[in-house]
Length: 204
Image (cartoon, rainbow, N blue to C red; front, top):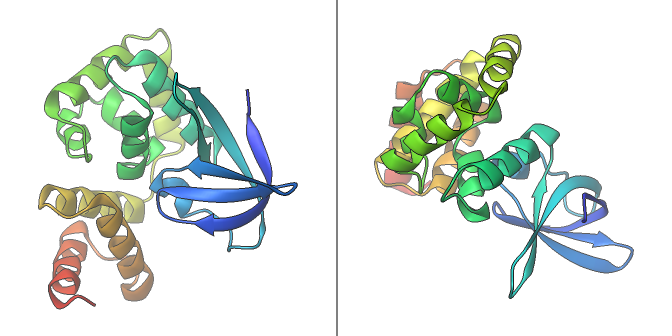
């Protein structure tokens, strides 16, 4: 099992990265949350990995933090009907803390807004993860201790709203992040959505 890679970042896209480890290039599929944390191309990188073996391929998934990989494995191993691709979409559409809070609070509405996750899948995630012994209690404590900042909550709401309006998850995520950097972190989700829609309309 390949558990991490330590090398140099050669290439990066919102969905994948290439890491040079001793002259060997490893292609790693990543969620948007990890893409945000990547170093600049050419810089050293250490990334946690999960090796998924299929009959026709061996695929590496990469994560810049242990909580992301833990949630990815939890989804893939303990929720029926969720494979690696959908698990990455979950991590791309919602922060780990927000996801945990949604499960603890039975917030199916927020979960079902994630790209590729319908109402039935969201209900299944809540049911099957909350039924795991100790998960809900541990997550409730974690949610209280590491609650997302108001800025993160507003950004997440804005991204989910844009996805619901039909915009691509990657585009919505990048634009909301850029808007918060340029306009200031104090914008509400509604204000961020309005600004984003203007940017999409003008193409700038």
